[in-house]
Length: 118
Image (cartoon, rainbow, N blue to C red; front, side):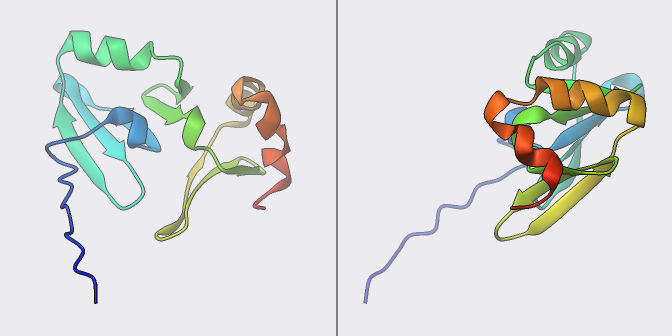
């Protein structure tokens, strides 16, 4: 029998925004990150928030909400689906006017995402 050491990953301390599915910006620098099995709030400086919102990995779908384009698994109607084999599917609604922008920015090989989950 093999002993495998489990390395605990503390999302709250080691948050990498590129691992999140999407984030929402609140008041006074409070940003709420949504990932595969967590939603956590973190206070960021104006400079950190500006750097995050200008990152090309993220696309603004509403006034204060940005999605991680790399993590989009599928698009159904006006809903983006993020999939994780262990935790299942997480979704977020996208206004129709912003949906075309999301589709346009997805990598070329992933244009079949609009057909649903594979």
